[in-house]
Length: 75
Image (cartoon, rainbow, N blue to C red):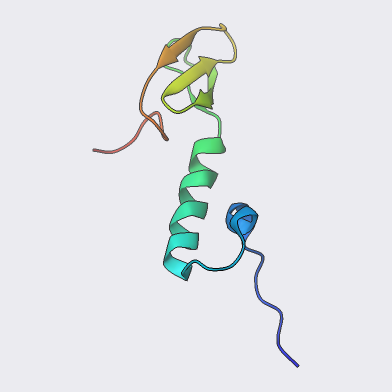
């Protein structure tokens, strides 16, 4: 009998047919982009990603453009 494997987290919507490295990288990016990040406008505020490169400050309601996946990415 086969042993159980870990759940594939966010990558599970794509099913089988991809390598483990692709799954791991996708899950890492998906987890980081869904976390609320600190706001550049309000020190205690949080920013939520609406779409690729579009961010919304939850406290003030400002919508602005930034980096695609992470607001404070290291370049």
